[in-house]
Length: 450
Image (cartoon, rainbow, N blue to C red; front, top):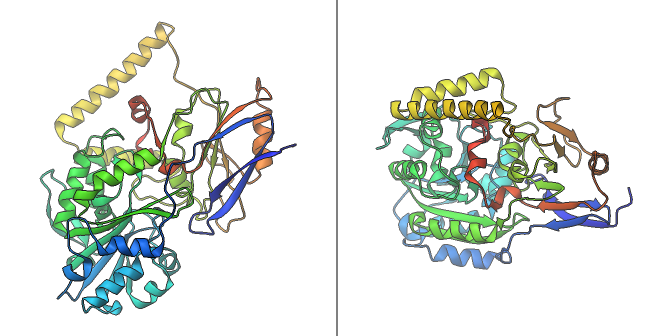
């Protein structure tokens, strides 16, 4: 393949964070939707933010007199580089008379894979992992009930949270199908399976543009119940470098942080493109999260567009306790049973009515010769590099290759393709806020929500 133009992206979050060059034939019209983020923050700038929390005193003042503090951090399935702030937090704990050996760090895994010590080092840094007590949450064990929210969600939380006399959180703010993550959503990561199930299945899914919704309100109640009132929220750029930090009372700063992400990462829908490339970095840890968070542009492109996902999937297929991938018939049956077990009667009837209405509308449309459902081209997954975690030989919905030249050849060999293709690249798709049509969100399956 003669290729004289290339684009530099990033890949392998947490496992090298290396540069990746994609070369294209020089006749192709290639456009990259880079986010409009400020330059990365220095350590001094981050420390200054932590010295001036929003709506609350500095950490050293709030935890003075405490003896069993707990720091909740998100796991590797979120790109938050917690190691950048942990030394400053430990310094403030020390100023309050709390040595590092008495500080516990709890990794909020939710229903994700339980992390190893090696993973802890990647997330919080080697010095913190050695000096503090590091604990990994397991949603199937060691949870105690602390109450029930006004929405009816039973709150089972990790025992380490209950045993602490001061709780803070370190996480990020990223888009998802419930609006935006971050803030009180970090509390979901330290809950028991029963609570997590109620949260995911017991609420009407909100528009991605509606950051404050019933799901978020329920999480706000839970965060207050478990004492998570002081937080550090980090926001990263396309290279996973920290460009914004907020801390203190997240109820005050959260809306502004979401507004920053929406503006900085806003990107148009991939209309009229011949080729759409969705780079799933910096949430490319596993195929489970690549397919749920890293390919939104590929769900929104035209039916004739070639669809390319880029994901290193350093941890292989990955794992999610509620929404496993690839889903089996048993998984779908379990998901339906879970929906029914927590759904209110009026909501159950509404969903059944909507489903029947949708089916009848499609059937009537076919009888009248109406448009058939959009059938897009198969999704190509480019998995660069060599990885210890291998994939099965076949995975439904994906054609997988580790050769970029194979991807280019595949595109060029598509019937009817011209020589001057229009290519759109989303370099950090999990962070980018597409101008979604609500119908696109409704079309997603429950397995797409994590």
